[in-house]
Structures are given as structure tokens and as C-alpha cells.
Image (cartoon, rainbow, N blue to C red):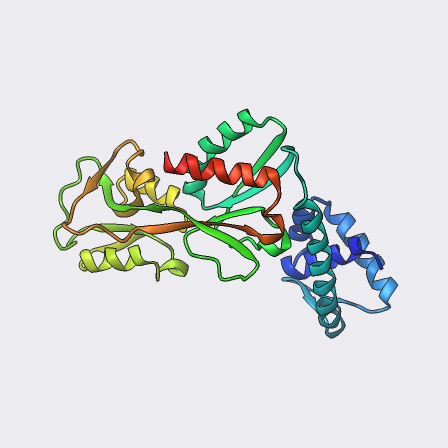
Length: 281
């Protein structure tokens, strides 16, 4: 059994479908199916139950999963150690951030960095899910809460103030009677700004939800309702006006982290320095 076979197995176990697993590994779906069949023949066991909703691990598959994850951990640790010794300013770096922060704050900084260091390719992934540094899903992860993994080196990148916005010309909301709100989806309703908004405008109704701040800003501009947005996003959005209620919504600290095995990677250190300097500016 080869490590490449276990990567296929893990991708299917995590994604639940051949199509999603194929996209994760940049393979075709027929190739993934063939490689899975080859693996099952090699071990002499059926590792997945094929259902209408996708692939579900069998008892034998569950047993293989535990071993495969340990092999993956060691293989990735080996790759990290080798990568962490790179002293040349060449190669690729993957950066993960939220949609609005990646597009509005990081993209201009990263563009300037690649002009200065043409041997480095920066891949910016804007995704609401938390990327796992230990699996090298990204080299640098930017997010709004500190990391609790002991192997992650982190620092506070910046503090982002938030404000209340509405489409230009919208009258003051009062207690929210007759007003509509644009806010986070239900999976993120525990976020501080969501609670602040409902307390400030208790009689308003929720009209639009999204886990994307960019989508919230566009909906707010189109007149869908009042929205709490990060000021670097809201202040730059044409057609929005800031609404003052006497108390600003809570802002958020932004953290950046990387795996400790990469702390000597020259291109990562250079990019981190550029991000810190760019955000401060």
C-alpha cells in the first residue's frame, strides 16, 4: 500500500463523495473510483458503503481511517520539516482568510509582495471554514479568533472596528420598528456584532442572512436593511452611509498563524513581514 493510495482513501472519507474528493486532490472522478477499487482489492476489504447520499465508511474502513490519519500526520510532518528549511525566496505560499478581509485588505498587500518577490507564488483562499495548519492546508491562516493548537505560532495582526450601515438616504432606525436587518446566517448568530444589532434595534426584523460579509454589504447597498460591517469594507462600499447610534458595535481582533515547523521558511517570514507592515499602513 502506498501513501498516495491512503491520500485517496482519506479524501473520500472526508468529502463523502468521489466528486468532492477528486476536486480536493485535483484528480478526475473516474480516476478516484479506480484507485479506490485498487486499494480495496489490495487490502481485501470493502472500505466504504456506497449509498445514494455518498460514501460511508464500513467498520473495516473505520479501522483503516485511524491508521491512515497517523500515517498522514507523519508524512506531512516530514514535508513540513523539509519545507521549513527553505532559505530561498522562491516557491508557493497558500494564505487563508475570510472573503472580505482577503479581497479588501490582503489582496493589495499580496500583489505588492509578488511584484517585489517574483519567484514566489501566493495563493489566496477565501473560505469560511477553518484551515488546518498541521495538514498543510495553508501556510498562513488569518482569522478572527486566536489559535489554540500548541504547534501554531501566532500573533495579533490588527484590530478591525465595525460600524452600522444602511443604503444612502435611509432614515434613522429608532428602535427598529418597521426596519429590516442584514446579518450573519444562523450558524454564526453567536458572533458579538449579531447580538449587538438585535439589542440596538429590538423591533427590527431580519430580512437577509449570509456568512459572507461581502454579500451582506451588497445587500445593504441594495436597500435590504441595516447591517453591521467591518469598517474597511463598509467605508469603502459606494452607496453606503454609516449610522451612529451612540454606541459602536464590538470590533474584532484579527490573528495570523503558521505551523512552528515553518518558522525558518524564508519566503513565509518575508510574506508575514509584508502583511504586518501592509496592514499597519
